[in-house]
Amino acid sequence: MKAIANEWFISAESDLKLIDEIIDIPMITHLAAFHSQQAIEKSLKAIVEEFEIGLVKTHSLEFLFEKVKSVFCVEVDYELIVLLDQLYIDARYPSELGLLPNGKPSVNESLRFFEFAKKIYADAYCFCLNKNKS
Image (cartoon, rainbow, N blue to C red; front, side, top):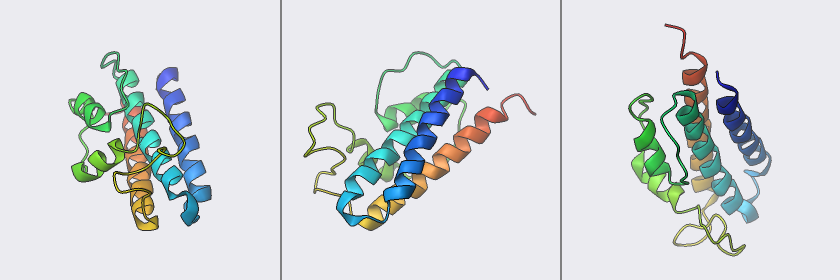
């Protein structure tokens, strides 16, 4: 695996470890959800780097999944991707960080995001790791 792809995975894993520590705290479900989006974004950017798909400067999961689909085919819930995309905001105002259109995600929504992020991370990591093994 290329060093830059591995760096993206290390960063994604850090997000996942953080989520694991905070997932059971109802007061900060928005932070768990936000870091789920970040872990997925970083996992997809690792694929972009590993397969030299091109320069990608976006935070949109929809765009990133579209960008990598020529090499990384994974079944995803696009409704979930749309929701996660709504968590990333450019302004980064504290009151908006990791909020959905209707406010903070529920504990169940955060758990769902976390499980999805773990799956994408694992699938992407294994995919890149096994790139040259066929």
